[in-house]
Length: 223
Image (tube, rainbow, N blue to C red; front, top):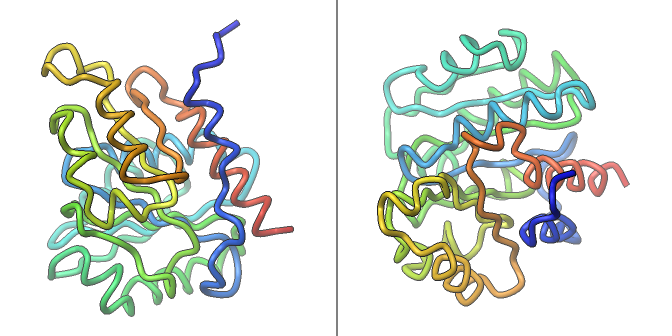
């Protein structure tokens, strides 16, 4: 049996009450810098949860449909449950400042599939990226260890305000000289009671504690 990692204990921390946000099913925004593992996390959550609940996904890219194409190629959901938004602008604009294109995509998917969970993946952005609560109910921000162990303490709204901070690619820590204890400590200092989980989606393709946390959100939304 797998030993219970201390990060697993954080999965009980569900933001309550959830922001009023839009009507309908739970919407979770997933943001973070380029290459951190946002699309890998979306894929992992879809695989882990698709047999337990109905899921739809909206991805954001500036000029391409790369992230949606990745999800379709890997068969994480039926094609008709995935929509790609080409923002044509800075990623944070489409998830925070002018959310119309994302709202339209979400509304179409919700009307067609009546899901329990909507995942909205931002395009790759910097530490200031946050989602409008007119678009989502909760936000996950994804960093990766390869960016260096100093990144969490740099803060920024994405790090400090997200409902869950995910520090991915912990299997690379030794290779890049990153200290995971420093990252964990600094994240706790800038985030207070907001939870942080350290994972390797390569080694934990089921995104265990993150999937459990999202499941808790869905239950809270239904309740």
